[in-house]
Image 1: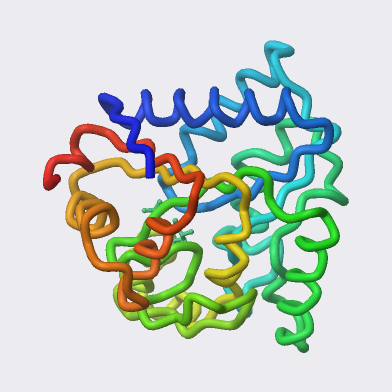
Image 2: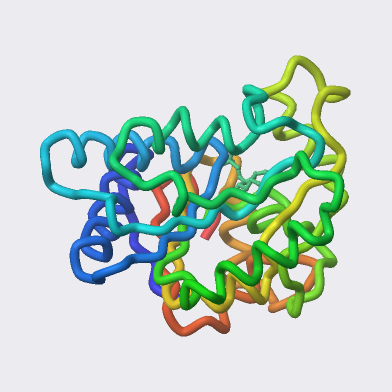
Length: 241
Ligand code: GLP
């Protein structure tokens, strides 16, 4: 894994933006894997700026988001559908038919998982996947203990994840208990992976991610075995290495 050290959150976002622009401008029909959470917000802001200044078009881009809560409607302010629309999609020229986010508001969630996996494969898998990392090492919503061979599936969210995400909801009780997430194997099939890590609260996780054993108890550790991973991390996140 290649580690790119940057000063702070802003530089991390800047770097991630330029990596994505290079990809979008060099592949005829780029397939991007996108993440939610606080970490990629700065990246999305910069992509919008680049779009507005005519540096990039998303017309030929297909996107797949990592995950979505089960039980929230698409227009719920805390759904990842809403997050993506708000932070990126409504500001750029992407064809919304090609902007995929798992739908957690369906009766047959199992079929939704299968279909999601199928569309990713039909699009030739992801060219470049953006990832954040949970403090417990989760990627997407793949919590500790998830098999490395997992495909898009339903997860029960760890209490620590619900607590970490409660800041976006009124209270912990309002945070859904289940989610759909791309599986670890699905993520591993991405041709290139960019992991964004910022802030001291991720320092412990980043240190274990880079130097710890490869183990299902720390999902991100499997990326040590991927041949094209770049970690873009700021000084605070790197403070425990
Ligand atoms: C969330 C998301 C992940 C995200 C991670 C870190 O629960 N499901 O995709 O990468 O946790 O979030 P944040 O960037 O807000 O720290």
